[in-house]
Image 1 (cartoon, rainbow, N blue to C red):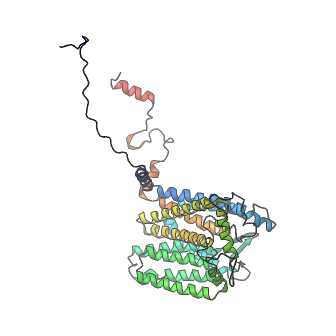
Image 2: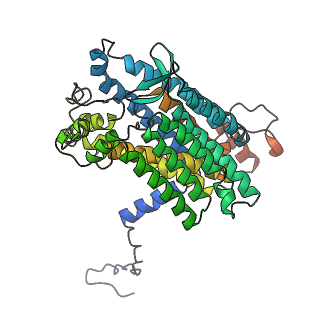
Image 3: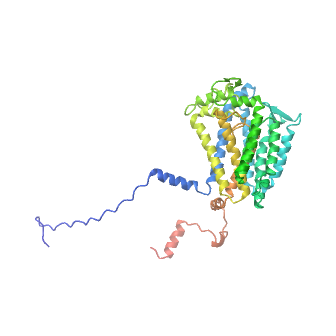
Length: 451
């Protein structure tokens, strides 16, 4: 072999291999979108959204009730935590109802539909009996339970209409009767008008609007034709216009939409304008918990109908957007449960509950923002009021039960059951479970001839 000038053998250079082309890097936004899409498509997504979203709304609502109600309680010569303690007690009772509803089978929910409807109608009729019913803020829709405890039966009418209407429409769908307009309307619409009449006798138009929204939601889910749906909507619209025109109080509330001064013509828009003041002074992150100025006698109903305004003042835009995001997640989960089930009762009940909570939240927040007239409805799961909190938490328990009852969700929950409590010999068809410890792996390796 010929040598080099230095007498050393030539160095052999390694042959260069052709460079393999690198895979293009995935766009971070696309990777995030893919992961988010997978998370949304998981079987337990609706279950966790309903459970987590409702718990967060309730906890944040308790905090804001405590902050917003202190001044009102002190002005009434009551302890500062008076309203918070009552709301906390209602939340504890509602937690029991939520847990019970989430564990009930669907058959039991359907069996409770008629008793709840009968009880709600009886209590709503009892409100109009002199000496039993009470008037609060001009509305005759309360029953005193003794002391400072009162109950508003019309709040339970929402739950009654959802359960009874869902059971009725499910039975008619099973018998294939919903293709006839008379079976779609009767007796759903007459019973709904009965509930609406009992509510309007007390002057509570806000709750009547929510019941009307539930009725329309059930008809929409039942596949009501456009002409039928438009006809019922037209009748309800005409009745609503008549009720508003014949009431100076409702006309004054309608005149306060978009008001920027406390006195707008003949209407006194003090509450609506000071709600806007509270939201405007909150800024991005608010003035801090307990630092609201408007709750010091300027903003009426600070812990009930206008608690969202106090939230905006103390927690700012970030706090209000968080509340809106929680309600949006709750609404999405309810729609997902209603859309993925094959049980007609579950579809109607889930759709009715979602319509109820979403419509009530939109009406309350729209009134605080000055976009809708003040209807006097609380923010669900958030505002003060045990009569509104108890049936709403039971309805949330319904959604949780329906989300758990999906076949994919049921299988996913079964796979997550703990296995540490299994006894030896109870491992199913494969025999008892053997723990994969280091000693067993070593013994398995020796038996296979490995060294």
